[in-house]
Image (cartoon, rainbow, N blue to C red; front, side, top):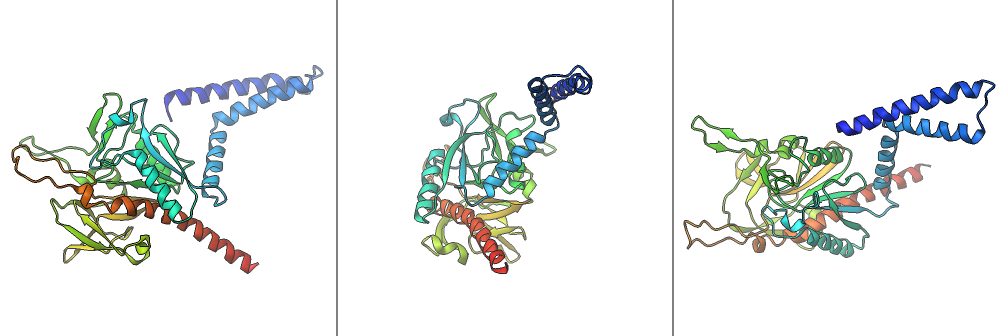
Length: 345
């Protein structure tokens, strides 16, 4: 909570208490207030006190989350699009060349194919996430921020997921970078590590979201394009395997559900480039693979560029499919639970 907000709440508490102290004696004394003046003053005082003690904010949040979870309302998907009046085209895409609005079309198409109804909205980073069933970050390894002192967007995102939200990061290491609108450029979010000679390195494990989710990421370098089989429950999107040129993966742990069958790097090390991860009551869908052309090294002009966008084109199909399937899987579970309750009655 900001200092300004604390100040307003304190002021509201003082005014509310003052109004009650003024009308209280008049109500019980012979100097009666008219009903209209008494009721209006009392209503304003109570409203101010409720605001000052966060009751209104808490009630509104509970109502929003209730609507979000209720299957009678159409699911809403929010796509982070802009921040602080910066043109979206000026916000860098990191290891993806798929425009934010394109993800809206891709998810809508996946929902139509599954005969499901959804609402998709492009939102500002400062918007509340609470009313959305899904929040998509389309900027890859870059999460746009409002400021790099308190990191309000990142903290809001963690709170959203923890309370049952569904977060999707479409490419690369999520939160490795942040776009700072105050200086209009990307800034490293992963803390620097310096050796004795002053050389800088940054470890994926220290990237904010990976550290929070306890994920261990690996850089696989330039891999050949291969076919990877999908886990049985996710093969319903039309294919039983997807074509990928791997770039980065995470080590499989107990709280990770891989979308592909585990990939063995070593006898005792299994990894996944595309996976679900639990956090609190919520869920993350993270794709570590790149979706654009790798930058060529100017020192080696004859080196062939690798077009990850073409090689990983299947991701543009399966990520929207996974969003829709997982979103309505929750609704199906709720329907099944209700059916059991009705049968028991």
